[in-house]
Length: 302
Ligand code: CP
Image 1 (cartoon, helix red, strand yellow):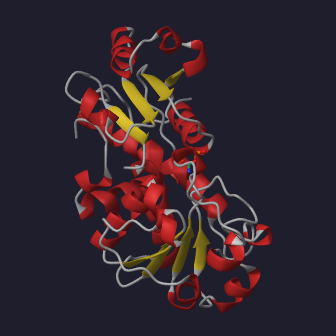
Image 2 (cartoon, rainbow, N blue to C red):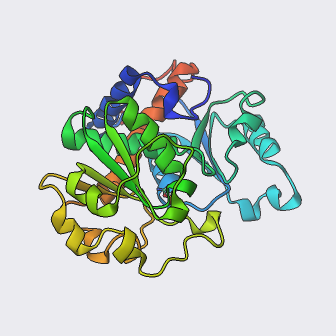
């Protein structure tokens, strides 16, 4: 793997190996014994992804080069490519990048000679979110085969919906979408069902936030929660074993009733916790494949 841009790069076996590696790292994090630098280049806002990458890198014993776009030379007109090239030149061993462009990876992938991990590409892909969601579902059900997973909300503008739907279907789940008309993406090959059907038939109800930052006029719905979201009444209709997921940030009272965010069915904060360990696994895999861990000992740092 040159760069980690999409879960579609992995075979099914590689996905399961990474899920198991994440579980093992949760029990027994093994820091690298060699000095390695990670640079987290976030050109879009983030709390979970940026901070869980930071925790993952620190648990692995890496030095973290933090980057703030507003106080960087991006404000003087430096491009993403030249910013990445600069971090490569000053000794970063790995780049974690989030950018609003759908295809920033194409711009970088041939000119940058250190591994890049995609932490979010516009509306196109959010592969580390996908991997942490797969881990959460795997922990719950032990398999993806024949699970009904409905992704509910702003499908059209969501990178999470695209990454997750493709991977879940490949792993054997039946994927459905549920969305208000303005949020339907007709280019994606998944059936749409109503939120009322979704709650009655799904093993996983995965909610999405309205991506206000990606559109101006769409998404101005009255009574959005009552018409399209997960109300307390709908939660009562869910299958006994069914779980609620959400990549967060959550708009409490918009796509989900505020009281359901921390209810027994909710795995929302478990997803965030899993994000640390799946990112550790991904970092370990990519640095290993680049030969950067050759001197690493399996002994835990004292
Ligand atoms: N789920 C997610 O990507 O959250 P952040 O935008 O806070 O990183």
